[in-house]
Image 1 (tube, rainbow, N blue to C red):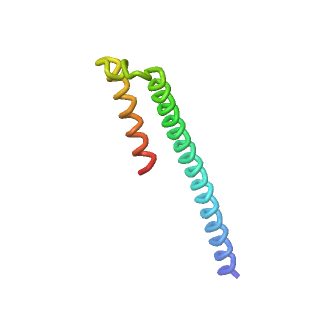
Image 2: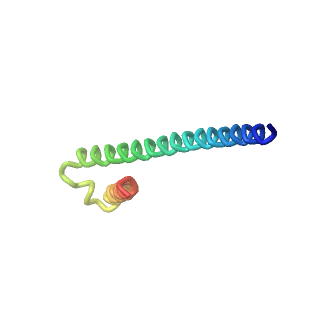
Image 3: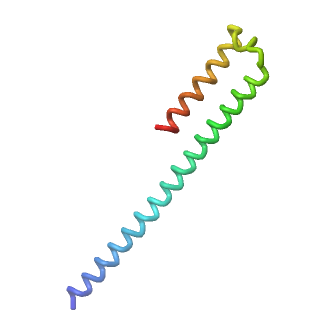
Length: 88
């Protein structure tokens, strides 16, 4: 009788532990998904910004300028870094 009670208690404790681990894993997956969505949103925003800048500078005058051209290069580098992170 005592053995059966101990086994039931251990079974309940084991079930509770599995339930808590499942809840923790679900929260972590939701958090990772939120971070991934934010990263993709940032990447799309930077890509759109770069494409708009390129469309404004259809003749390439600003892109070849020293100061403004540096902004083009910096945005392009950020886009490449984010793309590498997303595809990795």
